[in-house]
Image (cartoon, rainbow, N blue to C red; front, side, top):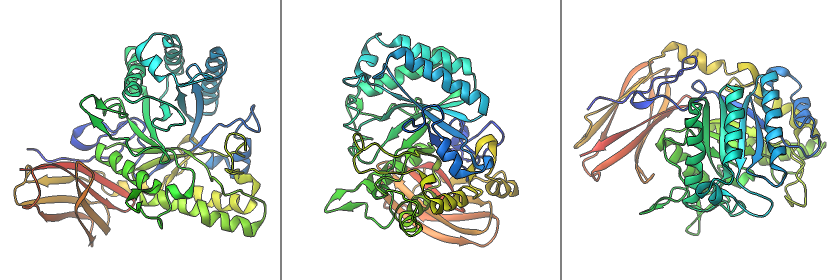
Length: 440
């Protein structure tokens, strides 16, 4: 069996493991999209005005903007379509990458089952496809928001059918290769996102229909690294987030943090209070992203959350605090972030130019008693190897310091491993290489 390779980003074409194309809109290695959600709580005409004022520099304006649309939505469906047209007109004028977040609901309940099994809303889906095709550029499409959250009321299996139906409408319009689909989870939801039975997956639409994994994190308990993954035998929200990220890595999918906001921090102008808020939420959030190179984008929601719909969430607008705004700007000036017009993200590109043909070879494959991973390290440094079963359970791991750029070999005894397919990850220098191998 031939070895597996991971080749890296070059201009618009990306090649990944097994010679397949990386998911659409995957950024260069080590780069993370800086995005923002267009909320209309304070300024319907210019929903990101406060966020832009806090950033204070067009060089670090977000490269992605997100727009919510309901099918049919609680408002008049024609208003939904009109709003979508205006959104794409703005994207065309300013040059950001548009993300459309579809929510399947009406004023009373969810509509995923109706969409899955009837033609009632096909006209809205076809209008969506036509508007996206008319825009004509690459974009993100998040279908259904937080799929298994009880607050959305979606239905197992029907959600999957609905997701595939919408994607297939883009296929029929010859626009599938321009939409990066996103399957989005929130850790407050149930831990059944990867569950399946004889009827198929409850929630996962399948690899061919899913380009990106999405993760919405609000409270710091979703990502605080000091917290456990389980407590009293029950998985925590942080544990569920980590398990979802692990599934994304196994599937070879990049992760976008579609909705993030400093929940329950209550930002104020006071500098002392702001420092405490920074340590309580923002510092932990940036650390979370640094520790997970599979996260390739985030959208911040710069909102003063309405007490009626989001009690206790408070004010998360960074412009409220000059101290927070200053630190936020400093974070955005890091070379990892990709801003409007492709600005930023200079460091990883420079590293990549030193060795653009980095790869991992696995042999023998299938393996009997010993498997070896030959890795072309792009730069010297500390790298870790982990091996997991398809159930996501860690089977083996090691960390080494590679002293020189070039080939390095990890050897792993696997005589006691059960037969089957395994996943490996090699992490280092803010990047991750992944693939599969077989134990005889």
